[in-house]
Image (cartoon, rainbow, N blue to C red; front, side):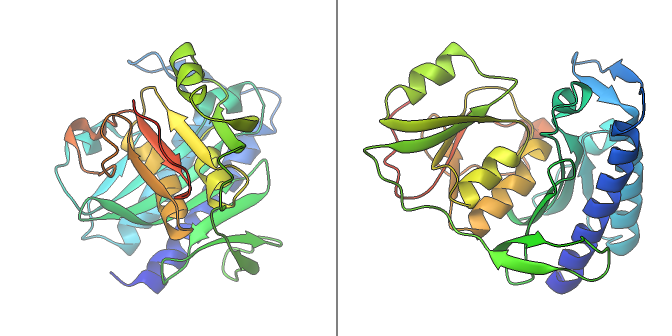
Length: 265
């Protein structure tokens, strides 16, 4: 894989997808449908998916592509592939809360090694550069010319008072019980894959997820966190979270800065 080309294409397509999403987000009204799993989907999901998928297939025709909005792609069996969630946090989008993201990642031999997470309503753009180091870009987000980038790095946690981030839309008693095993200084709620990015920047130390997710929900954020020195492991046995699983379904997991001593499941 040409990682310089990959970084440029993923960044550009995330920005273009985000612009399309914001056109619809800023409209007076938009259509919301319900998928077979009872989750919502909007015209923004579909428009961004069409744009991003076409761009990736044109640039990397020999790499399998998995995307949330194309059910036929979920039948792919591969360990190396591109994976897309064109609009993660659709509930946040529908409720106009802003915590939604565009996610594109490259998985190599079961590990997400490159990724981009763009939060267009928040004006935050995170990605792995061509060397695999994670950065946050600021500026005008020109499609072809990156602005100033700052390398990001996980925190050195103080276990006497951890910063924890949890899901805004999927918080439950089991999650609260698990978090209760730690000494917590502050708790944040965030939507979508932004939670991974908050750990990657050191704004949080720990993000446990005791709920259903799919690989397209997590791959890009996982890549960004890994490139910032963080880890993502299974909740049950603390082994690394791997990709290319049957139906691309995830187990419960924990994302964290390595200084955190994980509690048992």
